Image 1 (tube, rainbow, N blue to C red):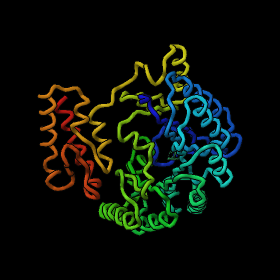
Image 2 (cartoon, helix red, strand yellow):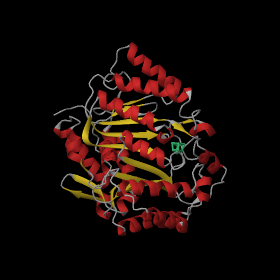
Image 3 (cartoon, protein in one colour):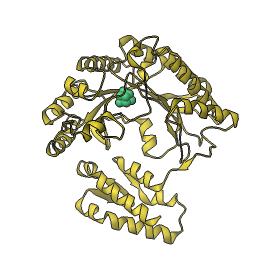
Image 4 (cartoon, rainbow, N blue to C red):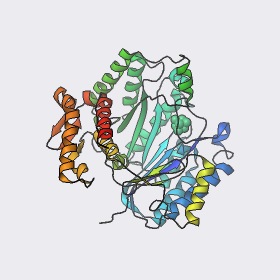
Length: 407
Ligand code: SF4
């Protein structure tokens, strides 16, 4: 069996401007983003040059069964640039028959012709960042698109899916954005379902340091749904999606049968993946390596890999091992949870230590097992749905406490 990763993530950092809640490694291109001065600019060309160099730097290339082009806003790129990227993988790594090739698209940065171009380039799954269909909420969040753009994009993707031109697509929404009370959230959910996306991601808003939202929040200028509304929003998400045939296979992800994201499951299950581009994190066999988030430093890093003849994802002094607490956290996000004993065994602890650490964790989790938030079947533990998934933070905090205490 090929032991090398079969999944690759590629980070395209360009955006029109930074949305008010976003703290990703992005490069805002401004108003020229859709013109040759945007995707054809020196900034973009140079980035792609270094990105392609990094992709080629791996010595032990392995045939891929999932590729995920994320960002930023990859749909800012011209379909020809996306084709070059996929061809690079095809020619140098190989792509399995039936591989899942996903690209994130933003309603403001592509049209029907671009979509056809991306499909011809080899993309067979799209993830559309709608976030909300409400213009007031979109504007308050610093999004560039309007409801009309989102509706058009959904219709194009729905048509492409029904015509068998793509295998799947995901519609992504953010829950509890400012101004998104119970009524607005119901409207967003119902609108989303009208387009019958095979996959829906529902992300909870996090206020990150350094974002416009953080500043406005500190000034008390953001009008969030009340706690009561936020709870009702979350409960209604579960009810509405479930009654429409969607199953929740991960805390933030719902799908119709057969449409789980194969690529994301690689992360959650702790399997290995390559990763390319500034700010991205690879983890070929448990070790994690995060590339510099700033363009200049990323380019220097790629040059250094070549100078030192390093296989950038295999050997690097900056690697850090993925810790057990992170493995448990990711595993618990999945509907099927994880076999705690199995991941404990990977730690190579002596039997006494393994048993004692296991008992201490069960002690921490006793109250969650009793209240039914956490369920145990043999050594497999999983969150109950919806209550356990909604209150997952409490269970994870107790697990992190256990981890700190045993280290
Ligand atoms: S489009 Fe996405 S990546 Fe770009 S700034 Fe907005 S949230 Fe961040």
